[in-house]
Image (cartoon, rainbow, N blue to C red; front, side, top):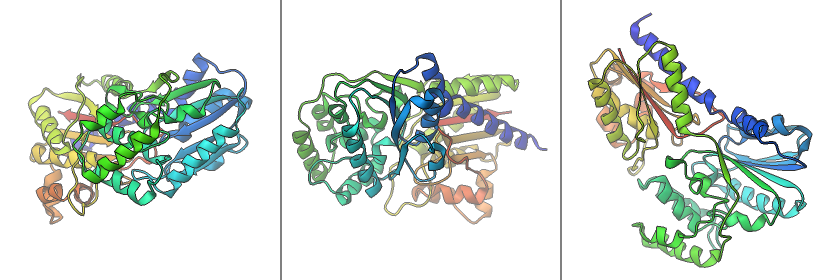
Length: 412
């Protein structure tokens, strides 16, 4: 077994250890064991980690669960797992909202309206909720909603700016859902997929009133057609409650990074953890991280965050992690003792079923052997096709969590 093979296996094992530390079922179970809920509980789980989080709640609450609603994306749900719990399961669109997202929004409002005021509601929120469930403002149909989200996803805007726009045209985001809760007991557990772990950004803040929304969106450079929708939305939203329930963060990127560091130390490696969040353009971040890896000492480096990717017309296959990894592979070319892993902790990267990629100093040569050009692939946002040809894609399947992206580097 070559040193490169051993290092690749090691990085994948460290990544797996990080995922286990933030897995939804486990973290929700621990939170409810530490602070139990009394009486009947209705569960509302929304996001990519909705199933694992809801299972953790069912484990902890048992017969106190009197029903619920689970909203997630295709490939992240097995309805049979909730037989006997009365939890309805719905699929929404991700990363683009679809008719399922709108149907899920209508079902959510209806279900909350039907609940007894004495039944506690347990919200379990994770990344992806922004597109998976929606109740848009009057007149905003699915065609325009998708046009809006398509523009936002390719704009290069940071996630907090993207979510401010989404909140502006939604009846439930930015605290809009609070008006449906009344005075009933409510608890919120969340897995953070946003920089800074701001509860107002997770899932576009369904239960966090956004009081300065108009000022926030006014500062953005947006096309006229989008600004017009925002103006209508802000006029329709009306006054909101000044406060919402406490948002308890049960899993974050920092927890995953700490678990990765511990796994590296157990393997006998020197470990360096980058406290600075990785952000900005994915290709630039990939090149920067690769150069730091080449100039740094031997061992394991750990970083994380969420980069952005401005898409060309007719983009190819891939996501921000694959784009970052391909850019890094260009810098690492010819170096036999370095590897870099960049992957989404939810098991998906962009609109693909790949989590990301694990590249090394020979990745670029393997891409060339396949008759492909890495620079052309970057320009076309087609990193997934090139990294498939080089054999460097990572596929984990649904992980039951979502704490942004994790980036691991190894130098021998």
